[in-house]
Length: 218
Image (cartoon, rainbow, N blue to C red; front, top):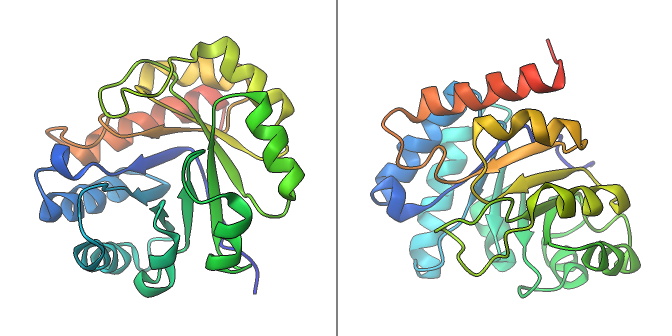
């Protein structure tokens, strides 16, 4: 069995508070996928494991048949229980080799990176361990205030040394699509550009339209 196909074009990372609670997360994901979101990550640092599993399984049900994988932030030990397509880990989370061992060979694994050194360390662990990189913050953002504002130049430096596709995260908006495409970024990972928006479906559609124009896709 091979790993699931995935598309980083419009990668939604959930924020339970911005969505107005667990029910809001489910509805936001439903609408965002209808609008064109291509990948979804469940992220919530406050829910206990039991409630996190319940929410994750609800999202698996919402995404069933949509061709949009669900990834789990950090909690690699819950991927199997939830039935998710994989996980995403940060530099201070479970190391990628351990994460891969826990989730198995057939699920997706993303890694946050902020520098070429982070990329080289991941390569040293094995190029077949990681599937993509999330790099940021592109802009300063309230959802992850601890993340440095990298800007396009430093993002481009990471992209140049990465053997994996890269999506930008951190204050990313539709207006960033052209700049990101120009430096050969593979997608836009967003939180507040969809979560908490009055119309998540339209927000996702606008992001996808901007990315489609920027990359020249039909």
